[in-house]
Length: 298
Image (cartoon, rainbow, N blue to C red; front, side, top):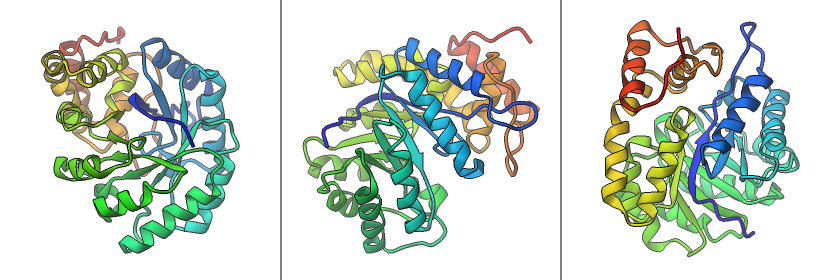
C-alpha cells in the first residue's frame, strides 16, 4: 500500500455536549480549523479522542464525520484499540470501510502479550484492513514495551506503513529509524520530544498540542524536516510551557480545558476522566498566551 504518513498530524479530541453526547457540530468545526491552519493529516478516535469510552457506533460516527469534513483535503486515520485481537480485527475491517486513508492500531493493553504475540496481533489487524495501518506504541498506557526488532519485523508487512512512537525513548526511535524500510514512517507521539525526534530522522508527529496550536506545530515539523533546526528550536522552546501544561494531568483532560478556553468546545469528558483542576486551567491560560494562542473572552 502506497500511503506515506509524514508531517504534522493532530490526535483529535472528541467534543461532547453538556449532556455528554458527541458534539458533531463542534467536532466538524475543529476539523475544519485544523485543515485551515496547515495540519497534514488527522487522527480520530485515539486516546486523545477518548476512544475507550466511546461506544463502537460513536467511534464510527466520529471517524465518518472526520472523513466527510476533511473531504479529501488531508489524509484521515481512524483509531482502533482493544486487547482482544478478534474484536480489533473486526473493528479494523469496519473502520477501514468508512473512507479513511489509514487505520491506527494501538498495542493491546492489560493482557501483556509477548513480542511474538504483538506480531500476531498486528498481523491479524493488517490482514483485516482495506487501507494502510499505523501501529501505536505507548507503554505508559499499555504496560507493554514493543521492541524495535518487533516493529521492524512488522514493517515488512505490505499493509503496515508507520509507527507512532510514544515511548519517550530516542534510542528506541533511532534503532527503528536506522533499519526501517525506506517507505516506513516513524512519527513522534510526544510533543515535548518533537524537535529531537526530527533531528534523529523522524518523519513528523501525531500531536496533542496541535489541537490548540496547529499552525505552530505544522511550522515546527516543516522546519525540522527541512533541516532548519534553529527555526524549529525557536518554536519548540516557545511551546514547551504549553506542552508542560497540557500534560499536568492525564491527556486529554488539559487539552479539552485549553480548547474550552479558546471557545471551541465545552469542557466535558466521560468518566472516569474529570475536567481539569483550577490550577491546571490557570497554567494553561498563562502558557497559551506565552505561546501566542489567543484565548477567547471568559
